[in-house]
Length: 248
Image (cartoon, rainbow, N blue to C red; front, side, top):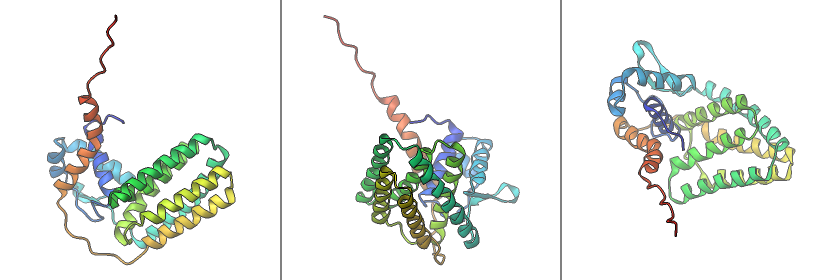
């Protein structure tokens, strides 16, 4: 697990809250309350919001006002068009570079999706479904492709938050498993077909009329996500060092 500095905690917590749709599009992100929430300066908050804006997750207006981005239907369709092209290339490159351990890594991730679904963690299940695609992109050996696809996947989370029906974990898990099997066989045609059908299902679920969302408590949401970001490193710090064996 990575160790995050204060600015990184702000960025990661807000980003994850957006991806899991705890912070929905249009939610205001005022600098002073965020600084108080994370106990950091406005400068660090501003830097985190700028990073999120560069990824299309936050809109920054005049007078440094910021809010979770609210993509239009036209923008949503454009994002899915580009994502289909990139995912098609991801499949081709992964098959060209395939190693058996890739299948084991992908299956391990799908097991995490299953665990979240069984625990009723709908938003975590949705996030993990997106991270499956990021994991796959990381196997291409092309960091530029990986970076651009990661941005598109996170922006699709925003689109689903605005226009989508609830995430169907059963569908995505089954589709991910089918894709892994096609990749393992080296069947590029089938793998690209499965990926295209999978993305079509996501887009169909996403591009629906807007839904009404309730007002949320920004502080309580971000406190939860800050804890999720920092908990792994805190656990490591508390873990006792192994005892050295006594010499006889």
